[in-house]
Image (tube, rainbow over all chains, first blue to last red; front, side, top):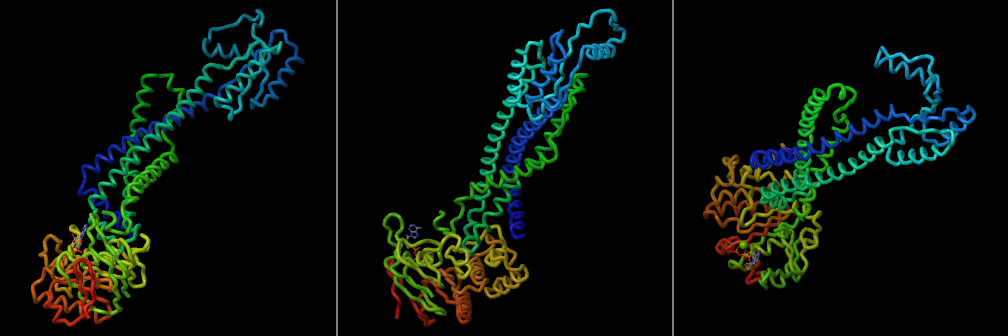
Length: 308
Length: 219
Ligand SMILES: Nc1ncnc2c1ncn2[C@@H]1O[C@H](COP(=O)(O)OP(=O)(O)OP(=O)(O)O)[C@@H](O)[C@H]1O
Ligand SMILES: [Mg+2]
Protein backbone atom coordinates (compact mmCIF):
# COMPACT_ATOMS: atom_id res chain seq x y z
CA UNK A 1 0.00 0.00 0.00
CA UNK A 2 2.80 2.32 1.03
CA UNK A 3 4.77 1.27 -2.03
CA UNK A 4 1.78 1.98 -4.22
CA UNK A 5 1.62 5.53 -2.92
CA UNK A 6 5.36 5.98 -3.46
CA UNK A 7 4.98 4.53 -6.93
CA UNK A 8 2.27 7.01 -7.90
CA UNK A 9 4.44 9.79 -6.57
CA UNK A 10 7.30 8.49 -8.71
CA UNK A 11 5.01 8.28 -11.73
CA UNK A 12 3.92 11.85 -11.14
CA UNK A 13 7.55 13.01 -11.03
CA UNK A 14 8.46 11.18 -14.20
CA UNK A 15 5.44 12.26 -16.21
CA UNK A 16 5.62 15.89 -15.18
CA UNK A 17 9.34 16.54 -14.99
CA UNK A 18 10.55 14.56 -17.99
CA UNK A 19 7.44 14.16 -20.08
CA UNK A 20 9.12 14.15 -23.49
CA UNK A 21 11.65 11.55 -22.41
CA UNK A 22 8.86 9.40 -21.00
CA UNK A 23 6.84 9.70 -24.21
CA UNK A 24 9.85 8.80 -26.32
CA UNK A 25 10.54 5.80 -24.13
CA UNK A 26 6.96 4.58 -24.33
CA UNK A 27 6.93 5.04 -28.10
CA UNK A 28 10.13 3.09 -28.64
CA UNK A 29 8.96 0.38 -26.27
CA UNK A 30 5.59 0.21 -27.98
CA UNK A 31 7.37 -0.23 -31.31
CA UNK A 32 9.40 -3.11 -29.91
CA UNK A 33 6.39 -4.81 -28.39
CA UNK A 34 4.50 -4.26 -31.63
CA UNK A 35 7.16 -6.24 -33.45
CA UNK A 36 6.94 -8.94 -30.79
CA UNK A 37 3.15 -9.05 -31.08
CA UNK A 38 3.08 -9.27 -34.87
CA UNK A 39 5.76 -11.95 -34.88
CA UNK A 40 3.73 -13.98 -32.41
CA UNK A 41 0.52 -13.42 -34.37
CA UNK A 42 2.17 -14.72 -37.51
CA UNK A 43 3.57 -17.71 -35.65
CA UNK A 44 0.19 -18.52 -34.19
CA UNK A 45 -1.42 -18.42 -37.64
CA UNK A 46 1.25 -20.53 -39.27
CA UNK A 47 0.62 -23.17 -36.67
CA UNK A 48 -3.09 -22.88 -37.14
CA UNK A 49 -2.61 -23.38 -40.87
CA UNK A 50 -0.61 -26.52 -40.27
CA UNK A 51 -3.42 -27.95 -38.21
CA UNK A 52 -6.10 -27.02 -40.72
CA UNK A 53 -4.11 -28.48 -43.58
CA UNK A 54 -3.13 -31.60 -41.74
CA UNK A 55 -6.78 -32.29 -40.94
CA UNK A 56 -7.31 -32.64 -44.65
CA UNK A 57 -3.91 -34.11 -45.30
CA UNK A 58 -4.06 -37.64 -46.60
CA UNK A 59 -1.54 -40.15 -47.75
CA UNK A 60 -2.66 -42.33 -50.64
CA UNK A 61 -1.06 -45.70 -51.27
CA UNK A 62 -1.99 -46.89 -54.79
CA UNK A 63 -1.89 -50.59 -55.41
CA UNK A 64 -0.89 -52.41 -58.57
CA UNK A 65 -3.86 -52.87 -60.82
CA UNK A 66 -3.99 -56.62 -60.56
CA UNK A 67 -3.14 -57.00 -56.91
CA UNK A 68 -5.02 -59.65 -55.04
CA UNK A 69 -7.05 -59.12 -51.91
CA UNK A 70 -4.76 -61.19 -49.79
CA UNK A 71 -1.74 -59.17 -50.84
CA UNK A 72 -3.65 -55.95 -50.20
CA UNK A 73 -4.28 -57.03 -46.64
CA UNK A 74 -0.57 -57.66 -46.21
CA UNK A 75 0.07 -54.04 -47.23
CA UNK A 76 -2.61 -52.97 -44.79
CA UNK A 77 -0.80 -54.81 -42.00
CA UNK A 78 2.49 -53.11 -42.84
CA UNK A 79 0.77 -49.73 -42.80
CA UNK A 80 -0.97 -50.36 -39.51
CA UNK A 81 2.11 -51.66 -37.80
CA UNK A 82 4.08 -48.52 -38.72
CA UNK A 83 2.22 -46.58 -36.02
CA UNK A 84 2.25 -43.41 -38.11
CA UNK A 85 -1.41 -43.25 -38.99
CA UNK A 86 -4.58 -42.64 -37.10
CA UNK A 87 -6.88 -43.85 -39.85
CA UNK A 88 -6.50 -46.43 -42.60
CA UNK A 89 -9.24 -46.69 -45.20
CA UNK A 90 -9.37 -49.05 -48.18
CA UNK A 91 -10.86 -47.69 -51.40
CA UNK A 92 -11.46 -50.24 -54.09
CA UNK A 93 -11.61 -49.55 -57.81
CA UNK A 94 -15.39 -49.12 -57.91
CA UNK A 95 -15.51 -46.66 -55.10
CA UNK A 96 -12.61 -44.73 -56.55
CA UNK A 97 -14.51 -44.38 -59.78
CA UNK A 98 -17.68 -43.27 -58.01
CA UNK A 99 -15.79 -40.71 -55.98
CA UNK A 100 -14.17 -39.46 -59.14
CA UNK A 101 -17.52 -39.13 -60.91
CA UNK A 102 -19.21 -37.18 -58.13
CA UNK A 103 -16.24 -34.91 -57.85
CA UNK A 104 -16.21 -34.17 -61.55
CA UNK A 105 -19.95 -33.63 -61.64
CA UNK A 106 -19.80 -31.00 -58.97
CA UNK A 107 -17.18 -29.13 -60.94
CA UNK A 108 -18.42 -29.78 -64.50
CA UNK A 109 -22.08 -30.80 -64.41
CA UNK A 110 -22.08 -31.92 -68.04
CA UNK A 111 -19.30 -34.39 -67.46
CA UNK A 112 -20.36 -37.95 -68.11
CA UNK A 113 -18.04 -40.87 -68.09
CA UNK A 114 -18.79 -43.53 -70.58
CA UNK A 115 -20.00 -46.54 -68.71
CA UNK A 116 -18.54 -49.13 -70.93
CA UNK A 117 -14.98 -48.06 -70.69
CA UNK A 118 -12.63 -49.90 -68.40
CA UNK A 119 -12.18 -48.43 -65.00
CA UNK A 120 -8.69 -46.88 -65.16
CA UNK A 121 -8.49 -46.13 -61.45
CA UNK A 122 -6.49 -48.31 -59.10
CA UNK A 123 -7.61 -49.38 -55.67
CA UNK A 124 -5.83 -47.61 -52.84
CA UNK A 125 -5.43 -47.03 -49.12
CA UNK A 126 -6.23 -43.60 -47.82
CA UNK A 127 -4.33 -42.81 -44.63
CA UNK A 128 -4.55 -40.03 -42.09
CA UNK A 129 -1.37 -39.16 -40.31
CA UNK A 130 -1.33 -38.93 -36.55
CA UNK A 131 -1.62 -35.33 -35.37
CA UNK A 132 1.47 -35.39 -33.19
CA UNK A 133 3.59 -36.28 -36.23
CA UNK A 134 3.06 -32.88 -37.88
CA UNK A 135 6.68 -31.97 -37.40
CA UNK A 136 9.80 -32.03 -39.44
CA UNK A 137 10.89 -35.24 -37.77
CA UNK A 138 7.44 -36.70 -38.39
CA UNK A 139 7.67 -36.00 -42.09
CA UNK A 140 11.11 -37.51 -42.28
CA UNK A 141 9.66 -40.61 -40.69
CA UNK A 142 6.85 -40.58 -43.21
CA UNK A 143 9.33 -40.24 -46.08
CA UNK A 144 11.29 -43.23 -44.90
CA UNK A 145 8.16 -45.26 -44.52
CA UNK A 146 6.93 -44.27 -47.96
CA UNK A 147 10.11 -45.37 -49.70
CA UNK A 148 10.13 -48.66 -47.85
CA UNK A 149 6.53 -49.18 -48.86
CA UNK A 150 7.39 -48.61 -52.50
CA UNK A 151 9.62 -51.66 -52.45
CA UNK A 152 6.59 -53.86 -51.84
CA UNK A 153 5.69 -55.42 -55.18
CA UNK A 154 2.01 -54.69 -55.06
CA UNK A 155 2.43 -51.00 -54.22
CA UNK A 156 2.41 -48.84 -57.26
CA UNK A 157 2.81 -45.37 -55.81
CA UNK A 158 2.63 -43.41 -52.58
CA UNK A 159 1.45 -39.85 -52.82
CA UNK A 160 1.05 -37.18 -50.16
CA UNK A 161 2.35 -33.90 -51.49
CA UNK A 162 5.69 -34.75 -49.91
CA UNK A 163 7.66 -31.83 -51.11
CA UNK A 164 5.14 -29.20 -50.11
CA UNK A 165 4.43 -30.49 -46.63
CA UNK A 166 8.06 -31.01 -45.95
CA UNK A 167 8.97 -27.52 -47.02
CA UNK A 168 6.21 -26.10 -44.91
CA UNK A 169 7.30 -28.03 -41.87
CA UNK A 170 10.87 -26.93 -42.21
CA UNK A 171 9.81 -23.36 -42.93
CA UNK A 172 7.81 -23.41 -39.73
CA UNK A 173 10.75 -24.74 -37.81
CA UNK A 174 13.03 -22.03 -39.14
CA UNK A 175 10.46 -19.33 -38.62
CA UNK A 176 9.91 -20.43 -35.05
CA UNK A 177 13.63 -20.38 -34.26
CA UNK A 178 14.16 -17.03 -35.96
CA UNK A 179 11.18 -15.42 -34.34
CA UNK A 180 12.19 -16.57 -30.88
CA UNK A 181 15.66 -15.20 -31.49
CA UNK A 182 14.14 -11.96 -32.73
CA UNK A 183 11.82 -11.72 -29.71
CA UNK A 184 14.69 -12.36 -27.31
CA UNK A 185 16.69 -9.64 -29.01
CA UNK A 186 13.76 -7.23 -28.74
CA UNK A 187 13.18 -8.06 -25.10
CA UNK A 188 16.86 -7.48 -24.36
CA UNK A 189 16.66 -4.05 -25.93
CA UNK A 190 13.45 -3.36 -24.04
CA UNK A 191 15.31 -4.14 -20.81
CA UNK A 192 18.05 -1.70 -21.80
CA UNK A 193 15.63 1.05 -22.76
CA UNK A 194 13.66 0.72 -19.55
CA UNK A 195 16.89 0.53 -17.57
CA UNK A 196 18.00 3.82 -19.08
CA UNK A 197 14.70 5.48 -18.39
CA UNK A 198 14.88 4.38 -14.76
CA UNK A 199 18.47 5.58 -14.55
CA UNK A 200 17.34 9.04 -15.54
CA UNK A 201 14.57 8.90 -12.94
CA UNK A 202 17.17 8.01 -10.36
CA UNK A 203 19.61 10.74 -11.24
CA UNK A 204 16.72 13.19 -11.18
CA UNK A 205 16.08 12.19 -7.56
CA UNK A 206 19.58 11.38 -6.42
CA UNK A 207 19.69 13.97 -3.67
CA UNK A 208 16.34 12.88 -2.38
CA UNK A 209 17.46 9.26 -2.31
CA UNK A 210 20.42 10.22 -0.16
CA UNK A 211 18.17 12.04 2.28
CA UNK A 212 15.76 9.12 2.40
CA UNK A 213 18.66 6.87 3.21
CA UNK A 214 19.81 9.18 5.98
CA UNK A 215 16.44 9.20 7.67
CA UNK A 216 16.35 5.41 7.72
CA UNK A 217 14.55 4.34 4.56
CA UNK A 218 15.08 0.68 3.71
CA UNK A 219 16.38 -0.53 0.38
CA UNK A 220 12.92 -1.71 -0.57
CA UNK A 221 11.43 1.67 0.27
CA UNK A 222 13.89 3.40 -2.01
CA UNK A 223 13.95 0.87 -4.82
CA UNK A 224 10.40 -0.36 -5.04
CA UNK A 225 8.98 2.78 -6.70
CA UNK A 226 11.59 2.48 -9.47
CA UNK A 227 10.91 -1.21 -9.98
CA UNK A 228 7.19 -0.52 -10.16
CA UNK A 229 7.86 2.33 -12.58
CA UNK A 230 9.82 -0.05 -14.81
CA UNK A 231 7.05 -2.64 -14.63
CA UNK A 232 4.51 0.05 -15.45
CA UNK A 233 6.46 1.24 -18.50
CA UNK A 234 6.67 -2.32 -19.80
CA UNK A 235 3.03 -3.06 -19.11
CA UNK A 236 1.79 0.19 -20.64
CA UNK A 237 3.82 -0.22 -23.82
CA UNK A 238 2.86 -3.87 -24.20
CA UNK A 239 -0.82 -2.98 -23.83
CA UNK A 240 -0.66 -0.15 -26.35
CA UNK A 241 1.23 -2.37 -28.76
CA UNK A 242 -1.49 -5.02 -28.55
CA UNK A 243 -4.08 -2.44 -29.53
CA UNK A 244 -1.89 -1.25 -32.38
CA UNK A 245 -1.07 -4.72 -33.62
CA UNK A 246 -4.77 -5.50 -33.65
CA UNK A 247 -5.31 -2.58 -36.04
CA UNK A 248 -2.36 -3.68 -38.16
CA UNK A 249 -3.74 -7.20 -38.19
CA UNK A 250 -7.23 -6.12 -39.20
CA UNK A 251 -5.98 -3.94 -42.01
CA UNK A 252 -3.68 -6.66 -43.37
CA UNK A 253 -6.44 -9.24 -43.30
CA UNK A 254 -8.94 -6.90 -44.94
CA UNK A 255 -6.60 -6.01 -47.78
CA UNK A 256 -5.64 -9.64 -48.23
CA UNK A 257 -9.25 -10.75 -48.45
CA UNK A 258 -10.07 -8.04 -50.97
CA UNK A 259 -7.13 -8.81 -53.21
CA UNK A 260 -6.94 -12.56 -53.00
CA UNK A 261 -10.65 -13.19 -53.34
CA UNK A 262 -11.61 -16.86 -53.27
CA UNK A 263 -8.17 -18.05 -52.29
CA UNK A 264 -8.38 -16.17 -49.03
CA UNK A 265 -11.83 -17.45 -48.21
CA UNK A 266 -10.38 -20.83 -47.45
CA UNK A 267 -7.66 -19.54 -45.14
CA UNK A 268 -8.80 -18.73 -41.65
CA UNK A 269 -6.56 -16.45 -39.66
CA UNK A 270 -6.94 -15.09 -36.16
CA UNK A 271 -5.44 -12.46 -33.89
CA UNK A 272 -3.38 -13.37 -30.81
CA UNK A 273 -5.68 -15.20 -28.45
CA UNK A 274 -6.55 -13.74 -25.07
CA UNK A 275 -4.06 -15.78 -23.06
CA UNK A 276 -1.25 -14.69 -25.38
CA UNK A 277 -2.31 -11.02 -25.04
CA UNK A 278 -2.34 -11.35 -21.27
CA UNK A 279 1.01 -13.08 -21.43
CA UNK A 280 2.45 -10.21 -23.45
CA UNK A 281 1.29 -7.58 -20.96
CA UNK A 282 2.60 -9.69 -18.11
CA UNK A 283 5.87 -10.21 -19.94
CA UNK A 284 6.06 -6.44 -20.48
CA UNK A 285 5.69 -5.85 -16.76
CA UNK A 286 8.26 -8.51 -15.87
CA UNK A 287 10.79 -7.30 -18.40
CA UNK A 288 10.27 -3.72 -17.22
CA UNK A 289 10.79 -4.66 -13.59
CA UNK A 290 13.92 -6.57 -14.61
CA UNK A 291 15.30 -3.58 -16.49
CA UNK A 292 14.74 -1.41 -13.44
CA UNK A 293 16.10 -4.00 -11.02
CA UNK A 294 19.31 -4.34 -13.00
CA UNK A 295 20.05 -0.64 -13.08
CA UNK A 296 19.31 0.00 -9.39
CA UNK A 297 21.56 -2.73 -8.09
CA UNK A 298 24.21 -0.24 -7.12
CA UNK A 299 21.75 2.49 -6.21
CA UNK A 300 22.13 2.49 -2.46
CA UNK A 301 24.29 0.52 -0.13
CA UNK A 302 22.98 2.23 2.96
CA UNK A 303 26.27 4.05 3.35
CA UNK A 304 25.43 7.36 1.77
CA UNK A 305 29.04 8.50 1.62
CA UNK A 306 30.18 5.31 -0.01
CA UNK A 307 27.70 5.84 -2.85
CA UNK A 308 29.16 9.11 -3.92
CA UNK B 1 26.23 4.46 24.72
CA UNK B 2 28.83 5.95 22.40
CA UNK B 3 32.31 4.52 22.29
CA UNK B 4 35.11 5.18 19.84
CA UNK B 5 38.24 3.09 20.08
CA UNK B 6 41.33 3.76 17.98
CA UNK B 7 39.29 5.35 15.23
CA UNK B 8 41.15 6.76 12.22
CA UNK B 9 39.71 8.48 9.19
CA UNK B 10 42.03 9.24 6.33
CA UNK B 11 40.67 10.83 3.18
CA UNK B 12 42.32 10.18 -0.15
CA UNK B 13 45.60 12.07 -0.47
CA UNK B 14 46.81 11.15 3.03
CA UNK B 15 44.44 13.69 4.53
CA UNK B 16 44.25 12.51 8.14
CA UNK B 17 40.93 13.95 9.30
CA UNK B 18 40.73 11.89 12.52
CA UNK B 19 43.66 10.34 14.34
CA UNK B 20 43.32 7.64 17.00
CA UNK B 21 40.04 8.80 18.49
CA UNK B 22 39.13 7.17 21.82
CA UNK B 23 35.98 8.37 23.51
CA UNK B 24 33.15 7.22 25.75
CA UNK B 25 29.87 9.07 26.16
CA UNK B 26 27.14 8.10 28.61
CA UNK B 27 23.44 7.89 27.91
CA UNK B 28 21.64 11.15 28.59
CA UNK B 29 24.70 13.38 28.29
CA UNK B 30 24.70 16.79 26.64
CA UNK B 31 28.07 17.31 24.95
CA UNK B 32 29.54 20.16 22.97
CA UNK B 33 32.04 19.33 20.26
CA UNK B 34 34.33 22.26 19.64
CA UNK B 35 37.30 22.95 17.45
CA UNK B 36 38.48 25.23 14.67
CA UNK B 37 37.19 24.96 11.12
CA UNK B 38 38.63 21.92 9.38
CA UNK B 39 39.44 20.21 12.68
CA UNK B 40 37.31 17.20 11.87
CA UNK B 41 33.98 17.85 13.61
CA UNK B 42 31.80 16.99 10.64
CA UNK B 43 33.96 13.98 9.87
CA UNK B 44 33.52 12.79 13.45
CA UNK B 45 29.74 13.11 13.16
CA UNK B 46 29.71 11.34 9.82
CA UNK B 47 31.31 8.32 11.43
CA UNK B 48 29.08 8.57 14.49
CA UNK B 49 25.90 8.61 12.40
CA UNK B 50 26.87 5.82 10.03
CA UNK B 51 27.10 8.20 7.09
CA UNK B 52 30.66 7.10 6.36
CA UNK B 53 33.00 4.33 7.45
CA UNK B 54 36.19 4.85 9.44
CA UNK B 55 39.49 3.86 7.87
CA UNK B 56 40.16 1.76 10.95
CA UNK B 57 38.99 1.38 14.53
CA UNK B 58 35.70 0.54 16.18
CA UNK B 59 32.62 2.63 16.78
CA UNK B 60 29.79 1.48 19.01
CA UNK B 61 26.63 3.54 19.23
CA UNK B 62 23.42 2.55 21.03
CA UNK B 63 24.57 -1.06 21.07
CA UNK B 64 25.32 -1.20 17.33
CA UNK B 65 28.76 -1.72 15.82
CA UNK B 66 28.31 1.20 13.46
CA UNK B 67 31.39 0.56 11.34
CA UNK B 68 30.36 -3.05 10.78
CA UNK B 69 26.65 -2.60 10.09
CA UNK B 70 25.40 -4.50 7.08
CA UNK B 71 23.55 -2.38 4.55
CA UNK B 72 20.29 -4.01 5.57
CA UNK B 73 20.90 -3.18 9.26
CA UNK B 74 21.69 0.48 8.66
CA UNK B 75 18.09 1.71 8.33
CA UNK B 76 17.12 0.49 11.79
CA UNK B 77 20.20 2.19 13.24
CA UNK B 78 19.33 5.46 11.53
CA UNK B 79 15.85 5.32 13.01
CA UNK B 80 17.35 5.52 16.49
CA UNK B 81 19.31 8.70 15.81
CA UNK B 82 18.43 12.19 14.66
CA UNK B 83 20.98 14.21 12.70
CA UNK B 84 21.07 17.90 11.92
CA UNK B 85 23.48 18.21 9.00
CA UNK B 86 25.66 21.21 8.49
CA UNK B 87 24.25 21.51 4.96
CA UNK B 88 20.71 20.71 6.15
CA UNK B 89 20.03 18.10 3.44
CA UNK B 90 16.45 19.14 2.76
CA UNK B 91 14.57 17.89 -0.28
CA UNK B 92 13.91 20.87 -2.56
CA UNK B 93 10.64 19.77 -4.08
CA UNK B 94 9.02 18.74 -0.85
CA UNK B 95 7.30 21.26 1.39
CA UNK B 96 8.51 22.03 4.90
CA UNK B 97 6.00 19.71 6.51
CA UNK B 98 6.79 16.90 4.05
CA UNK B 99 10.50 17.26 4.76
CA UNK B 100 9.92 17.21 8.47
CA UNK B 101 7.64 14.15 8.24
CA UNK B 102 10.12 11.98 6.32
CA UNK B 103 11.67 10.01 9.23
CA UNK B 104 8.22 8.88 10.36
CA UNK B 105 7.06 8.28 6.78
CA UNK B 106 9.86 5.86 6.01
CA UNK B 107 9.04 4.01 9.22
CA UNK B 108 5.50 3.58 7.98
CA UNK B 109 3.90 5.49 10.87
CA UNK B 110 0.20 6.35 10.79
CA UNK B 111 -0.64 9.44 8.75
CA UNK B 112 -2.52 11.00 11.63
CA UNK B 113 0.35 10.56 14.04
CA UNK B 114 2.83 11.95 11.51
CA UNK B 115 0.66 15.01 11.04
CA UNK B 116 0.38 15.61 14.77
CA UNK B 117 4.10 15.18 15.44
CA UNK B 118 5.07 17.35 12.45
CA UNK B 119 2.94 20.19 13.76
CA UNK B 120 4.42 19.77 17.23
CA UNK B 121 8.06 19.94 16.14
CA UNK B 122 7.43 22.77 13.71
CA UNK B 123 5.88 24.67 16.57
CA UNK B 124 8.95 23.93 18.72
CA UNK B 125 11.21 25.54 16.12
CA UNK B 126 8.74 28.43 15.62
CA UNK B 127 8.01 27.58 11.98
CA UNK B 128 4.36 26.55 12.07
CA UNK B 129 3.41 29.42 9.80
CA UNK B 130 5.76 28.21 7.03
CA UNK B 131 4.75 24.57 6.91
CA UNK B 132 3.57 24.76 3.29
CA UNK B 133 6.64 26.62 2.02
CA UNK B 134 9.42 24.98 0.03
CA UNK B 135 13.07 25.07 1.15
CA UNK B 136 14.09 27.58 -1.54
CA UNK B 137 11.54 29.99 -0.17
CA UNK B 138 13.18 29.94 3.26
CA UNK B 139 16.09 31.83 4.73
CA UNK B 140 19.20 29.95 5.86
CA UNK B 141 18.09 30.10 9.47
CA UNK B 142 14.61 28.85 8.61
CA UNK B 143 16.04 25.94 6.63
CA UNK B 144 18.22 25.09 9.59
CA UNK B 145 15.18 24.99 11.84
CA UNK B 146 13.38 22.67 9.40
CA UNK B 147 16.40 20.37 9.62
CA UNK B 148 16.20 20.51 13.43
CA UNK B 149 12.50 19.69 13.41
CA UNK B 150 13.14 16.73 11.12
CA UNK B 151 15.86 15.42 13.42
CA UNK B 152 13.48 15.51 16.39
CA UNK B 153 10.23 14.20 14.97
CA UNK B 154 10.86 10.51 15.65
CA UNK B 155 12.08 10.94 19.26
CA UNK B 156 15.62 9.74 18.61
CA UNK B 157 17.74 8.31 21.44
CA UNK B 158 20.72 10.24 20.15
CA UNK B 159 20.62 13.68 18.59
CA UNK B 160 23.63 14.78 16.56
CA UNK B 161 23.69 18.46 15.64
CA UNK B 162 26.40 19.86 13.38
CA UNK B 163 26.45 23.60 14.10
CA UNK B 164 22.67 23.84 14.50
CA UNK B 165 22.79 27.55 15.34
CA UNK B 166 25.40 28.62 12.83
CA UNK B 167 22.91 30.60 10.74
CA UNK B 168 20.78 31.97 13.55
CA UNK B 169 20.74 35.31 15.32
CA UNK B 170 21.67 35.26 19.03
CA UNK B 171 18.13 35.20 20.39
CA UNK B 172 16.97 32.45 18.01
CA UNK B 173 20.19 30.55 18.71
CA UNK B 174 19.41 30.74 22.40
CA UNK B 175 15.89 29.50 21.74
CA UNK B 176 17.13 26.52 19.74
CA UNK B 177 19.74 25.67 22.38
CA UNK B 178 16.94 25.78 24.92
CA UNK B 179 14.99 23.34 22.79
CA UNK B 180 17.95 20.97 22.57
CA UNK B 181 18.34 21.13 26.34
CA UNK B 182 14.66 20.31 26.75
CA UNK B 183 15.04 17.32 24.44
CA UNK B 184 18.05 16.28 26.50
CA UNK B 185 16.07 16.60 29.70
CA UNK B 186 13.59 14.09 28.26
CA UNK B 187 16.38 11.52 28.04
CA UNK B 188 17.89 12.01 24.59
CA UNK B 189 21.66 12.13 24.40
CA UNK B 190 22.62 15.33 22.59
CA UNK B 191 25.90 15.94 20.79
CA UNK B 192 26.34 19.48 19.41
CA UNK B 193 29.20 20.81 17.30
CA UNK B 194 29.65 24.55 17.56
CA UNK B 195 32.02 27.44 17.05
CA UNK B 196 30.21 29.49 19.64
CA UNK B 197 32.63 29.23 22.57
CA UNK B 198 30.75 31.91 24.49
CA UNK B 199 27.69 29.74 24.61
CA UNK B 200 29.69 26.65 25.51
CA UNK B 201 31.08 28.50 28.51
CA UNK B 202 27.65 29.76 29.53
CA UNK B 203 25.94 26.39 29.33
CA UNK B 204 28.42 24.53 31.51
CA UNK B 205 27.99 21.22 29.69
CA UNK B 206 30.49 18.49 28.96
CA UNK B 207 32.86 19.39 26.18
CA UNK B 208 34.91 17.43 23.68
CA UNK B 209 37.60 19.33 21.84
CA UNK B 210 38.96 18.39 18.48
CA UNK B 211 42.01 19.88 16.89
CA UNK B 212 43.61 18.71 13.66
CA UNK B 213 41.88 15.35 14.00
CA UNK B 214 42.94 14.74 17.59
CA UNK B 215 40.09 14.44 20.09
CA UNK B 216 40.34 15.41 23.77
CA UNK B 217 37.63 15.38 26.39
CA UNK B 218 37.72 18.57 28.38
CA UNK B 219 37.55 17.79 32.07
N1 LIG C 1 34.91 14.20 1.60
C1 LIG C 1 36.14 14.63 1.91
N2 LIG C 1 37.18 14.32 1.11
C2 LIG C 1 38.42 14.71 1.41
N3 LIG C 1 38.73 15.45 2.47
C3 LIG C 1 37.74 15.81 3.31
C4 LIG C 1 36.40 15.42 3.07
N4 LIG C 1 35.62 15.91 4.05
C5 LIG C 1 36.44 16.57 4.87
N5 LIG C 1 37.71 16.51 4.44
C6 LIG C 1 38.87 17.09 5.11
O1 LIG C 1 38.88 16.61 6.43
C7 LIG C 1 39.22 17.65 7.32
C8 LIG C 1 38.16 17.84 8.39
O2 LIG C 1 36.98 18.33 7.76
P1 LIG C 1 35.60 18.51 8.54
O3 LIG C 1 34.56 18.83 7.56
O4 LIG C 1 35.42 17.35 9.41
O5 LIG C 1 35.95 19.81 9.43
P2 LIG C 1 34.99 20.60 10.42
O6 LIG C 1 35.64 20.53 11.74
O7 LIG C 1 33.59 20.11 10.32
O8 LIG C 1 35.09 22.08 9.85
P3 LIG C 1 33.95 23.22 9.87
O9 LIG C 1 33.97 23.79 11.23
O10 LIG C 1 34.47 24.20 8.87
O11 LIG C 1 32.69 22.63 9.47
C9 LIG C 1 39.44 18.89 6.47
O12 LIG C 1 40.83 19.05 6.29
C10 LIG C 1 38.78 18.58 5.17
O13 LIG C 1 39.49 19.16 4.10
MG1 LIG D 1 31.85 20.88 9.73
